[in-house]
Length: 217
Image 1 (cartoon, rainbow, N blue to C red):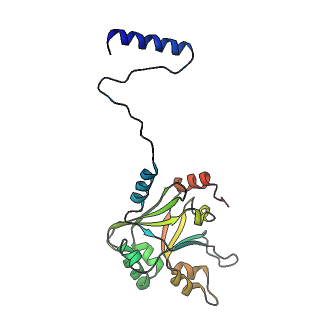
Image 2: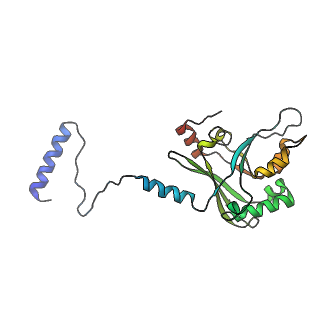
């Protein structure tokens, strides 16, 4: 910018400020300022990155403990169902090992033995996705990470049961059916069918519940 151009810019800035408009400024020499629009292709790439290496869950549900004498002093159990085959075990071999241990030692012993970090992440948009993140610290199941994907809108009515944290179970629909679809079955039987994990509060689910108007009760 030469001297005359600088004077014109300064006069324009003073006039704009006097008129109450925004201040004008020149970009530093040698720098190019660009504005990049967020396109559908960008969203598709982000969605692809979000889904990379994950497992699509087979479903989700909530189990509530019975009331009355002898009831277990815990809240709802948020259940994530998976397929007990290579659709799950290919991307997440740790879950194959976890189900084997579940059959060998039971759910509560498995819960004490496993060292697993948990959390939720999400991707918004027209069809929001919610990811259950699992970080296995080893040695049993072996060290590694897995992600289970749920369609946010499909389970809009039950997210409020887990948004503040709580107990989560990973199992299959067949395991849960065998454990609970019989005379005398209890909430405890449902727990025994699950890989049990604890979860903390989720800011992501809080934002989704507010942003998409999902129920809070």
